Amino acid sequence: MSTEHTQSHTAGWVEDAMAEHREHGDSRPGSEHADREQQVLERIEKARRRKPKVKEERITLAHGSGGKATQTLIEAVFLTGFRNPELAKLEDGAELGVAGGRLAFTTDSYVVSPLFFPGGDIGDLAINGTVNDLAVSGATPLFLSAGFIIEEGFPVADLTRIVGSMAAAAEAAGVQVVTGDTKVVQKGKADGCYINTAGVGLLETEHRLGIDTARPGDAVLVSGPIGDHGVTVMLARGELDIDADLVSDTAPVHGLVAELLKAASGVRALRDATRGGVATILNEVAKASDVSVVVDEEKVPVRTEVRGASELLGIDPLYVASEGRIVVVVDGRQADAALEALRAHPLGADAAIIGRVAADPPGLVLLNTTFGGTRIVDLLVGDPLPRIC
Image (cartoon, rainbow, N blue to C red):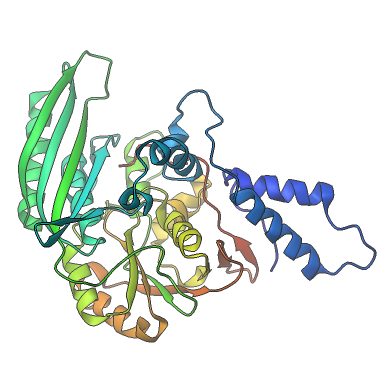
């Protein structure tokens, strides 16, 4: 395996391990490349086992990016403070046993800038995002809450437009907004409007989904082209002189998930590829299941416009958020059945098998590049596209 560098924002533990290896690497005459490679992997594993600790004295935008800084914040502060078996799973939703039944419960907040963008706005994004977190938990979404934090001076017409989008999205997804809250803060204390949601869904199957269930031999799929939402929002800010015919892919995926689970009982894990993109999800799977995930770059579906804009921005589409795409880990023997089920649904027409799960090196995601090399796909520390959801 070659060791091509990842992006400049890669997580610190890989960089620290590589630096330590260069400083203290094997100096024995005639040492083989494989020996050096094994030492690097061992140092990476040692670095990853260190107890999470937030080194910064104050919160930065990186802590909300969904990458390494977010993971460290969650594990060092929130998981430590609220530790319980359900929270420790770090899934998109919690599974709750209630009166002999099973519910999925999730919450999310939306701070996207700008509030309105091609293909959607903060309103339908909030509904779809919450529905999707329930869907990838294997639940049928039912009820949502909506809390608004509104800045003084915000146009009532814009708020009405946002609420209208939420109502339309809820109706399309077959859910109801049944409770909520409104707070107004002084001018300059917010950025127009923020939305917090919570959602409840019904779990009717014993099929357990989880990022800790992946096994060597499993296949990895995505339900369609990645990165549409993140790049669309970035370009909508008007800060870059880039024109692209792109719209957000925001959409509810519970219908797609239902068809997938009917067709493939061997589905292990599902995630919607939001903050941190596909790369972050695959790292979470690799770490939780103690496996490696090997992705073939040429098989990852990316629109030409997204790829072109990403190259100009100096970012990798694997790290860019989608809002209507899912990542699927499924028993390799059922990969074709899963792919067929995804492609039979309008939201999965361009689904693809992008990789596989292997045993070694555990805890890492590897990318077979279009240039014939292999590199580590690490968690980013921050986010090259902040506030995209």
